[in-house]
Amino acid sequence: MKRLIQYLFSSGHVLTDHSIYDGVNSAKYEKSGLTLKEAVEITNEIKTAFEYNKLYKNNAVGLGDLAKHIGRDRYKVSQVLNEYMSKNFYALLNQYRITEAKDLLLSQPFLSVKAIMYEVGFNSKTSFYGAFKKETGLSPNDFRSFTLHAS
Image (cartoon, rainbow, N blue to C red; front, side, top):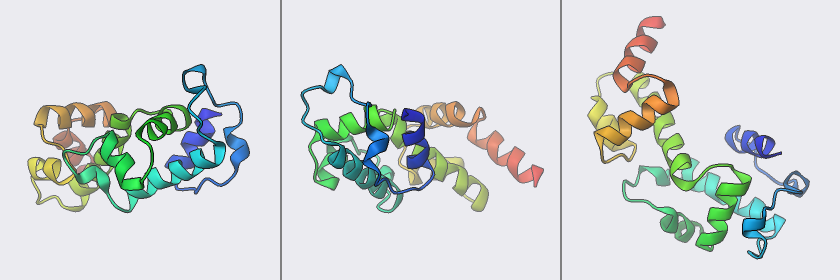
């Protein structure tokens, strides 16, 4: 069930079918008051905030900033991230940042890795390289070299 929701989120589908959320609630959030309709709305608002507003580029963004940006309760946003999207805030943040970094590494080979790191919202070379390697298995420089030379 959670994999289906995660697939729908990552594939660009707008979630409107409340039935896919049946049975997802856990004991941790039993008293949160989050409705299925609200969970669908929050999921779509999070997606919009990251994909269209590119909130992840803000190097100081946190869960509270996301909640404020979409006008929702921070705890409900956290619940949607954890239960319905199977990610915590920082895992989702890094996913978007690394996706954009990969695009920039290939589409703008004249940009330094450090410039790209800052462009996508990272403050630290260590955290950027760690997140990049976790996502791709390669360092940013190796990713650029292997991908550009493979084509």
